[in-house]
Length: 441
Image (cartoon, rainbow, N blue to C red):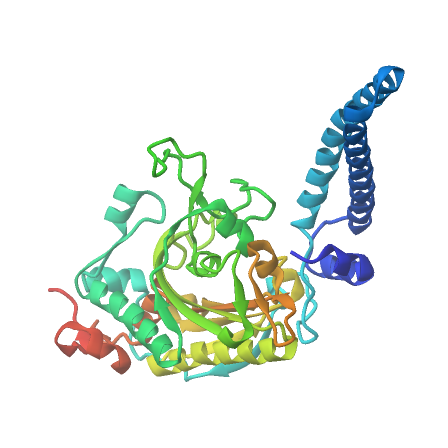
């Protein structure tokens, strides 16, 4: 969310950003509502001041004067009764539009209409060649007896899956490797809640609007009721997170930090849940697009310095590149164009690993810089060296998700005999330092 003062002073720039991000938003209407809101608020404050003044006169007023004062008070009260609902109506419309105002984009963000215009800025690693028929991860998973999609669909429905035997060890090895990598990089590890209140998701931009909308938000709402500590039924709606990012950032909600505490670097391991409603009909087979998975996520809270945030953003991306290189996975980095960025992003990258069955790259991570857009929603500030309160900048990046690197490892490291070689950096996390998974006879 942007500051309304900033929007007033930069209306034309924000109109341009909205156009480039494919966001249909009437900034002129927003500014009109802003003026109406302020005028109505001023009117209410004047009525309240008049009411207070009349209340002070009542005790000393006598006779006709008292009757006149009481009559004036009655008129003021009636005006307030009418004015307050009108103000609330304008305020609600104003706030609904404010939640959709996009963040500015960095100078190096490509201008483009959609994901087709993202820009490949780097490729690394050697794409493997095979002198035998290549299997996809579905067939490999079946032959190795480490993946069961049929039973997954039977028990969990569409996009359900079971990981079995050495596959479990491999997936958990990916998670442990990722988490330890982040600890080595100076990030504090955390296992955050995956069942959260709506404010965590609104605050981080996972609701398109002010409230949850099941038609557009790829988030699961929990239907069953809950109890508060006192035993009463909870009125709070609860949701399942699609990444640890909302939980990690909301941890600092409504806090005022000190500049010397910054940057705060946290890595979170969590289960993740995504409805994938916007991806109907895409990647319907295998593990590439599923409703639940594990992931290690990195987030940073830092001082409000754009240039320093860009350096931090680049450093977070470097960690992802290092991880892909250590896993031996060929990868490429995409700079995300304006039309493929969500409202709150200032700057973004995707990293993709080579997947032979796709004969192309598949996304394995995303790094985003939101500046203070999320911090304003979550109300996270810090006191700078001059004693001034500012909103922190917030950045996030995927360390590793569980399914897609799993796909890439199976497919890139398959052997002619049907076995799969496990990347060396993962072997210490495998039972008995297992280095190869063999087909089951």
